[in-house]
Length: 111
Length: 112
Image 1 (cartoon, rainbow over the protein chains, first blue to last red):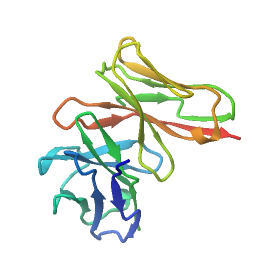
Image 2: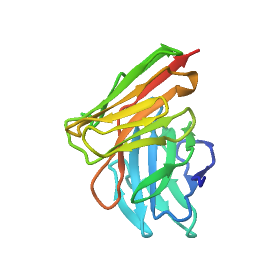
Image 3: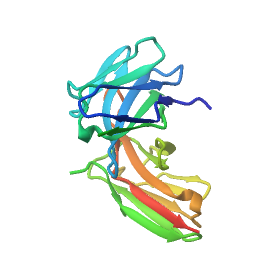
């Protein structure tokens, strides 16, 4: 069964550093998403990406965040100048209009 | 305020017991989904319900969508340790992106 693959599975970074989280979506999917889950809290929408541009973003997704699909397959989330409160699980998802599939996530720890 | 409130927040039961978890809202939805999330993994879709009053069964799991399409329940019969996980309801918000809004979650632990 097709999977959404995320790398790395774990990332520890110093506060103020930049991180790039990577995702390989399912190949025939057209919609791409990033969600975040802070430990013990619910899964929150960050951003959706369609037709090579951001189609919607939440209030969490401020100028610190950016997304790219640099080579037509990978889908990345860049977090600039990380803060302690950015520590969370970050999930990529890809989908069609009928539904979507989540990756296993990247656990980001900012120290 | 949360769009989707789930209850209970935590549930610890013995293997073989039955349980029901709830997902409630004051809003009406065209459809609602249930996901299960295991530690260190992403949410995995269990079912989508679309019709008011609809009941769907997935082995020992029974999902029901409320008649008014504002709430849903998940009933597990004869729970097993493998059912342990975080159960999330979610709805799609209208618009081009089909983003999901998740509920607050029910963390279920089934003790052997």
